[in-house]
Length: 120
Image 1 (cartoon, rainbow, N blue to C red):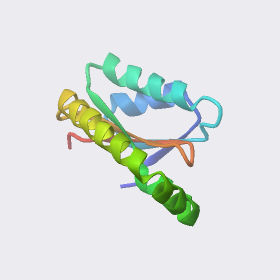
Image 2 (cartoon, helix red, strand yellow):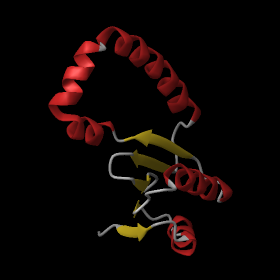
Image 3 (tube, rainbow, N blue to C red):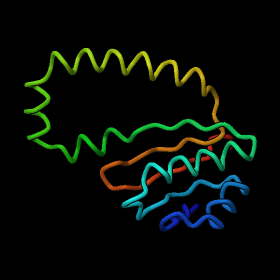
Image 4 (cartoon, one colour):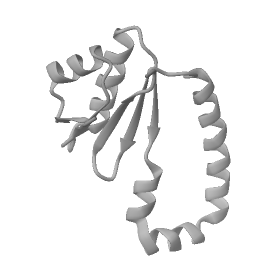
């Protein structure tokens, strides 16, 4: 099955895909990335559905390369504290959004969103 691609915030197309419980990607989100995330979360919740937002860390790490590794090694103590705090917050968010209808994966590097319907 091929996944739909939405270019920018095409409200009619996004609403139709959400109503039909489809998975899709939204690309071309240069200047309004955070507003786009909020819009899609709001539309999902308006349909009486739950969603969980997460970050595509693998893509960011792959783009970081050697420089990211060196910077990471230098800031390891601070990163360990932040990672522990992020884990606690993430666990709380996962429990709050247990068994979501949709999962929104945010790709900050490529400025795209992957919206996946989870209840098939």
